[in-house]
Length: 345
View 1 (tube, rainbow, N blue to C red):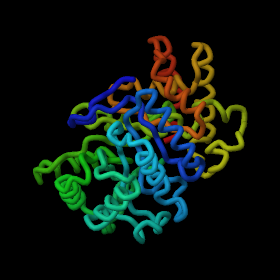
View 2: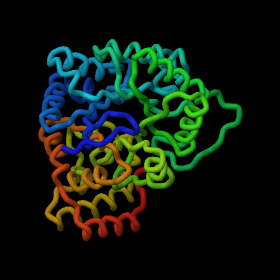
View 3: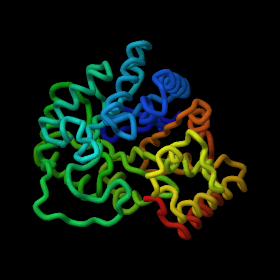
View 4: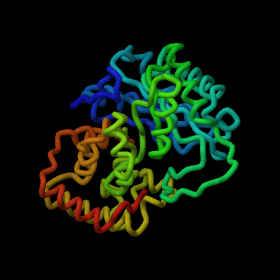
């Protein structure tokens, strides 16, 4: 396993991070325990979760994933071997069951951190992330930005100040962003500088062969500001594994169960996936491992967040770190990208 600096901190995280959002819905606690054991055995020292998980978010599943991780820490005593990341939910009618409608205000963040610490059975969160912005902007598949005058949103200055207080209290070590835009990242940096407080250390956004929009604007910020990408959905909800090819819908697969994630299954995404799967076959590679290693090997990526609903899937994902992508293959990937640019944003 390779280990990389987390922003400007003294932490070094594994190049692969264990994603956990299915635990408590598609996966049981026993499944989660087995996945954490396997990931740790493969050298993964970085786990990512969120207060909102498991997904899809419902009152019944809220906090379940953090509870499973907390129980594993209690059972194994291995909390000190893990760099732990979780997230505070932003606003949205679909999660009104969280504190009556979560925001990134001081009051909400303090309440969210305390609840996560209790569920995770730990004294400190290593990386606390803002799950999505507390303002109208383009995330979760939206490419275009439409401005809204006089919207009700929490000033980033208030969020930065609250995060500084939480760091000083010892409840979190560092903070990061998620589903953010270039403007948002730089605004956080400017506010941190103005307040003379800690700055964000990471950004967790989608990135895959079907969605390389991060490369426009944000990749430069990652390099110049040392705010690396924690890439999520590197397989585009499993599309790039090839398991949905030729109109196949495996019974327990995520896109079979949750068909409303339709941006991953549109005609362009399906056509591009077919090209990438054929390319992997010509080079004797698993399409899953080719897609994952492409993400992991990008210079602006700090860690690639892999998730699975079974141990064989997880093992295949973990072994992607052993794959080498040669120059010829990379050129062919670029050619497909030019033909099918970002079909699943």
